[in-house]
Length: 428
Ligand SMILES: Cc1ncc(COP(=O)(O)O)c(C=O)c1O
Image 1 (cartoon, rainbow, N blue to C red):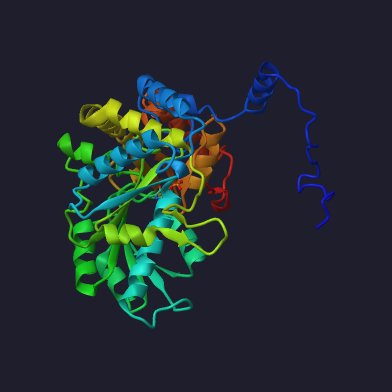
Image 2: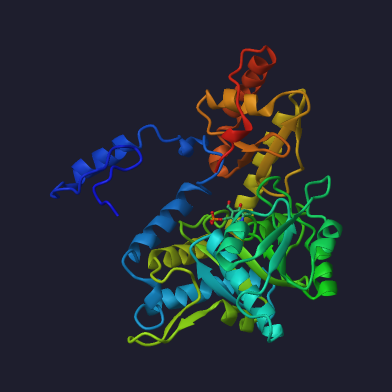
C-alpha cells in the first residue's frame, strides 16, 4: 500500500506536532461543529435522545466517574461495573417478564445486540442437527420493515435475508412470512416498534407462528424496549411484545435510545441462559489463555454501564412513566397538527414516538427538501414516500416551528416554487 497516497478528499491531515492545550483544542472542536444540526432544539429527526436536563446530568456524571474503567475486566478488576451491569440486566429481565432461566448481555448498541442475538440463533439451529455445520445455507425471515442491522448481521454471519410484505396497517403480516420459512430458517423477526412506520408488530401472532414452525423468534425492541412498557402502564393500550409470549426467544432493547442512557448502551435478552451461552464467544488457542466475551467488542466503556445503572435508578418506574406520558402527549399534538393539514396522512398510527406521514397528492421528496431549507434535518421514508421522525423530548418545544415550516413548505411545493428532492436523498 502506498502510505503517501492522498485521502479521497485530496487532503490528508499531517500527524500533529502535539502540545496544544485544552482551550485551543476546545475552540477548534467547537469551530468544526459550528454548522452541525441544532439537535438541542429538536432539529434532528433521530440520533440524539433526551428526557430532561437532570437525567442528562446524572448519565453524564456517572459516565465520567467510571471514564477509564474497562467493562471487559469487570469480572476480575472492576467489581463495581460488574455489579452495576448485573443490576441493569436484572432490571431488563424483570421489565420483559423473562422466566427465571433468562439471561442478558450488555452491548454497545442495537446493531451489536441484533448480531449477538442472531449468532445465538444460528448456534441453536446448528446444535439441533449434526449436519448443519459451517457452510450450511441459512436464512432469516422478517417483515419488510425490519432494521438493516439484520442485513448487516446476515452479511457477517452468512444468512440470506427474506423480507415479507407488511399488512396495510404497517405491521408484520405473519401469513406473508409463513411461506418464506423453511428448514434453513434460523430465526423469524418482529419489531417493537419498526423504525420506518413506528408500529409494534403483532408479536402474539408471530409467537404462534414461531411455535408452529419451531423457529426462534427475535423481537427487535431496540427503539421501544425500555419505554413501551411504561406507555402501557399509563393506559395507552400499547401492544405487549415480550417474553410473556412463549415463542419469543430473544429481545434486543437499546438503553441509549428511549432508556435515555448515554451511548453506547444496549441490551439483548434470552429466554434461556443456554442461549446466552451461545452468544458467548470463546477462544482458547493463543499463548495467553482463555478469552471469553459475549459482545463483538472486547474493550468496552465502563462509563456506559455505570451511566445506564445510574439513569435507570434515577428514573425508575415513576420517571419512565412520566417520560412516557410526556412523549405520548407530544406525539398526539404532532399527529394532530400534521393531519390537520389538508392532503397529509399518517402512514400508520404511531404506537410510541416514531411518526411517519405521507401525502397522496404531493411529492414528499420535494416537501422534505423544501423543509430542509428551513434548517431541519428531515427524516424520510421511501415506501411510501414520506417524512419521518423518531422524536424525543427535544422535539416538544420545536413543534410549532416545525408545523409552521411544514405548512410553508407544502405551500411552496404546491405553488411550484419548492426545491425538488429525489428518492436518492434518503440516507441514514
Ligand atoms: C428498530 C431498530 N433496530 C435496531 C437499530 C440499530 O441500533 P443502533 O444504531 O444502536 O445500532 C435501530 C436504530 O435506529 C432501530 O431503529
